[in-house]
Length: 396
Image 1 (tube, helix red, strand yellow):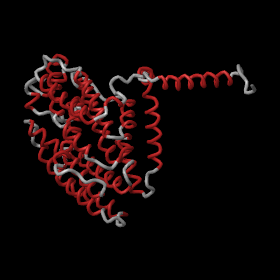
Image 2 (cartoon, rainbow, N blue to C red; image 1 turned 60 degrees about the vertical axis):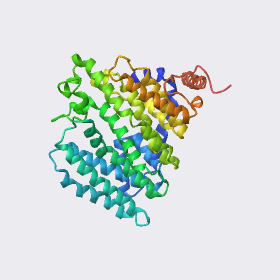
Image 3 (cartoon, one colour; image 1 turned 30 degrees about the horizontal axis):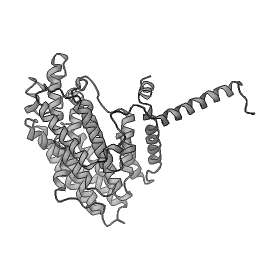
Image 4 (cartoon, one colour; image 1 turned 135 degrees about the vertical axis):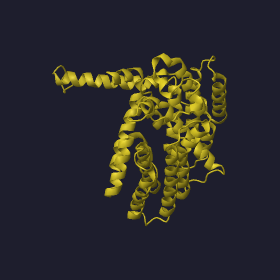
């Protein structure tokens, strides 16, 4: 009934969802026949069907490199979660894993060594950074940025290295800085959204929110999940979101520099989903009660509509408007939040064609064409039912 209710409220989610479902089915049919690649892509699909779809739209050589890179880092992330296993004991296994895949059937490519070196370098740097924070709490905002750099900023750097190695991109002189910002924006969004899951982790809570921020609002980070502390919890949440917004300008600059359409979509879709998630989380006490995430229909729309930089500017403008309406001017950080959102909106207005966009905010099924399609489908169902019960015949 929940899905039906969502469809009735957002009827124009239906078509993008159907398109995404068909695209995922097509992507599954294109999984390489070699056993090791079949394993890699099936694992990727299990982790995230929509993300798997975006990866599989990349060119074959780059797609395989990104797939291996993602799986190696997911394995490393699993190592980080299990603090009973020394990270340095697992790194050689991860490096051997990706080297085996590359050495199996990539010798036809003159680029495979560049891909391999990039993945190995980032894996080592990330492993060392994760090991540092196993015994080191995130105290300051600088600690927070450093941790996010190790677990996500390095991913941004690694992907940029793969893009450059593929010959598809020639990035700006500051590509390392803005690549890092791309990763930080996504990671901070995940850390904000996953507060309750992380704090309830057994046997030990995972605490990534910096004490410098949450210490203003609670004696312990876990106190924010209790209903009696809801007001302080929401204020803390809003400051965390405001901190994440500082990376948007760099993210837009990075995406605007991309040339290859498939790489652009690969980068842009998660970024749009991140700003959308922040808009949902801001001032939302449900972050401390359960799961807050974009509905599947909205995710499908983002995947379907994101084709050009104008689409990105339009999406960031919409979601920043949505977030802006939720800002209480009595909030401790309200002026800072509003200033950041106004800067984002101005940037989008200056560079985007906003009047031509399809809005994500006021998008609840106003399309007459969609209602016509739904009416035709309904009439077809009724006609089939009547024919099956002999009320109408096939002969006219």
